[in-house]
Length: 119
Image (cartoon, rainbow, N blue to C red; front, top):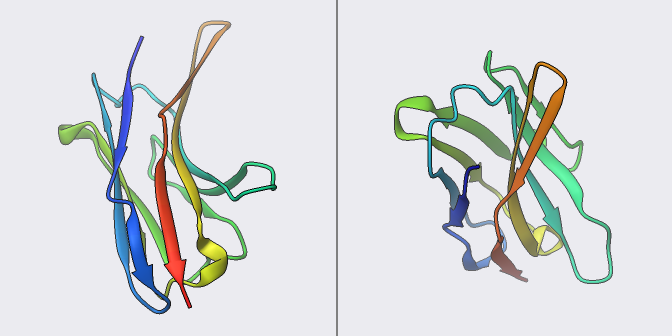
């Protein structure tokens, strides 16, 4: 079992930046997928960015060039640097960690952090 705690959300003007952090209660070294999802009111949760254990990253088209995901295994933390924020980035952002051990899949979620981008 692992707990994920997001932080760093808040209110920012369009064009501004925020850095989200996802702190895990234990080592994230074994998680072969860690990602940030977001859910805006009335919309489905969508994958924003992900990073593998080998540090391969993937981004939604809507955030490419503006957001950067990174992981610090020593600090058991995953980050999402968000620059050039737009009002449409407003959402609750969730941290997710996945791994498979033999045939059993593990999937963990944080409770989310609110990001509001004003125009």
